[in-house]
Amino acid sequence: MFSESIVTTELSLVSNSNSSVYFISLPTNDIQLTTAVIEETTSNFTGLWYNRPMFSPCASWYPNAITFANESTLGSQTHGIFIDTYNTIYASSWSNSFVKVWPNGSSTATRTIQAGLYHPYSLFVAMNGDVYIDNGAWNGQVDKWISNATIGTRVMNISAPCYGLFIDNRSTLYCSLANFNNVFKVDLISVSGIPVMIAGNGSSGLTSSLLDYPWGIYVDTDFTLYVADCYNHRIQRFGFGELNGTTVAGGMASGTITLNYPTGIVLDGNGYLFIMDTGSYRIVASSSAGFRCVAGCSGSSGSTADKLNNACYMAFDTYGNIFYLLTMARIVIRSGDQNWNIGGGSSGETLQKGDMICTYRASYYHPRFDIVKLNGKSAGGSFSYDRTKSKEEVYNAFVEFIEKQIAAQTE
Image 1 (cartoon, rainbow, N blue to C red):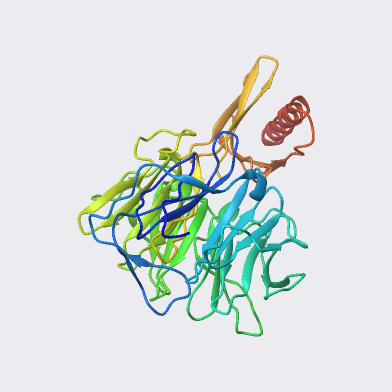
Image 2 (image 1 turned 135 degrees about the vertical axis):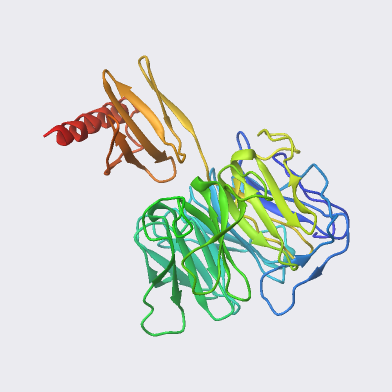
C-alpha cells in the first residue's frame, strides 16, 4: 500500500509511486491519519530502526492527501506517532487512551495497547520493539510495553505529560515536559533510572538556556537535541552536554524562517529539519537552499485535502511518508455577555471583571489555567477545572479564583 498515493481530506503532502508522507490531523469533524507521496526515489539513513529518508534539495510533495485512519479508529483527539523501518505504524488516541498498531504497512490495525493508560501525549518505539508511552497526565510515569504485554511497566517518573518522547541509539529516553519548560532524559539500561534535566530549568524564558512550552523533540545520532520551543516560536539545538541552545529556525534568528507555535520536529537522512509549524497550518523544511514550505502552504487552516488543521508531530516511513497530528486547540466559552478564550500563547490571554484584569495561559488538553499577571503584577498559581461542569460553572469558579488571587496580593 505504501507505493500508492495516500492523502487525507485534511491536508496533503505529495505523492507518486516512490515515496509518501504520513501524518495525523484533526479536520473539522474528524481525526485523520493521512499520507501523501513524494515525487522522487529516496534512500534511507542506515543503522537506525526509525526512518530518516534522504531527499534531493528540490523534492516536492503533491498538494492533496487521502485518509488512512479516521475518528472511527482513533477517536476524536490524537497524540503521538511512530513508524519503524518495517513501516509498522504506531499512533495514540488521547481521547480514548490507547495506542493502535498497524504492522508492516497494513491498512488494518492488529494491536491495541490500552490497560492503565490515561490520555497519552506521545510515544516512541525502541530498537527491540518495546513501546514507550507517555502516561503522565494522571499516572505520573512513562510506561514500557513489551511485545504482546497486557500491562505496561513504569520506566520513568514524571510530574506532567511528556509532549515528546525519543530514544537514542544508547538506549536513553528523552521526555519534554511542556508544562514545566524543560527536557529530561533517563538511562534505560541503568538500574537507578534517575531522570536528569538536560534543557531548560523549569522557568519560561527567551534566553538560550530557557524554554517556553517545549513540545516535540528529536535527537540526532551525535546526541544533539532539537526542541520545538513552542511558545518562543523557534527550534532550539542543544549540543551534547550543553545547557545553552542555539536557535536554528524561527525566533529572532537571522537567515531562517518565521515560525508560529511549532510543535513537531524531525530530521531527514541529510540532517535537514522538517518542522510542524502548527500556528501557520503548514510543514516547512530546511535544505542547502534555505527554508521552504512543503505542505499546507496557503497559510490557512481548513478541511479540504490541501490544508492542515492544527496538525502536530511527524514521522517518516521508509518511503518518505510523514505522520502528523493535532494537539493545539482553542475554544471560546460564553457566559452571558462575557467572552473568554481557552488558548495559549507567549503573551497570554486576558480576562477582565470590573477593574480587575488577569492575564493567563491555558490549554484545553491540560485542564489548568496558569496565572501570568494580576492587575499588572506578576503572579503565579494555577486554577484547575472539571470539564464535566457547565461553561457557566467553570467561568464563575475562575472569576472567583481571580478575585482571591488579587485579594491575596493586596494584603
